[in-house]
Image (cartoon, rainbow, N blue to C red; front, side, top):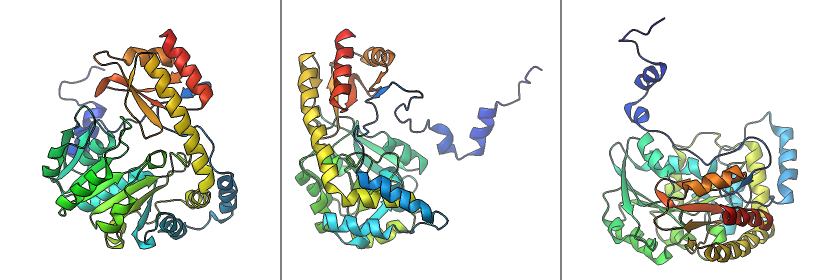
Amino acid sequence: MATRPNDTSPAQTARALVRPEIARIEGYVPGEQPRGDGFIKLNTNENPYPPSERVRKAIVEACDRLVLYPDPTAREVREIAARLYDLDADGVVVGNGSDELLSILVRAVVGPGEGVAYPVPTYSLYDTLVALHDARSVRVPFPTDFSLPEELERADARLFFICNPNAPSGTVVPIERIDALALARPDAVIVVDEAYADFADRNALALVRRRPNVVVLRTLSKAYSLAGLRVGLALASAELAYELHKVRDSYNVSRLAQAGALAALEDQAAMRRHAERVRTTRARLTKELERLGFQVLPSQANFILARRPGEDLSGVAGALRERKILVRHFREVPDSLRITVGTDAEIDALLAGLRDS
């Protein structure tokens, strides 16, 4: 039957039923998670090595208590994190990955139309979260060396996101510059998103102890090899954490995730071994890519950004995918590929593919 001119499509009907700011955005698009075997995944910054052997045992034991709700505040995870980072356990908020914690921060701090500032290019989820909460993005371009832009301090914003090490560049800004920003903007919350801090030389934990407006985020998805469990940590003053708990879902982290997180945090030696392996392979990957004519930014993360200025590398990414090797190509930095540091064998396959592409 022919569609009448005044009929609307299902998509148009759905958009009319949701908030206008939701209908307008595309939504965050994560890296490809392929179906089937045989892929080398160097596109989503997962750790190529398994988690601590203690994690599996802890999760199996937790299965016996699945009829019960989990601890609503993940008390044991908060306590061990506090011991590891020399903080007050009341200042630790556990989330369903650090992504949920980012959402909690936007919901708690920013009202409709208020600003959220961050240097770009960076983690693209920030854009989506700001739009979802009807706030306003203040996107301040990074200079070519990815140092912290001076104009960021003057941004009209209630909340600042500093991804450090930054994604997709892997670069870091000095902790002193972040401290200066926090000192200059006591009217705003400064969030240091340290998803990759365990692969870096420095971190911003000391700022949490002396700046009441600083929040540091950590995740167990990267160095702890627990991307599938979804556990993140927000580290803040006890007073600010109390406010964040008000907008956190009651049972936001499952019993299995809490058990696995606790076991992983208790086995720091396993995490450090894997992080050191990644750092060693990262150095080799950087040298080999430079031999192939790429410019590689100095990375402190478990990935690198390989560039050929002026050349769109989407075709290279496509050619690698045909060989079942996945890397990340972003429209915002078309002359670059973001490459996760995999095992040495995976990196050998990647380099062979690049030589042939």
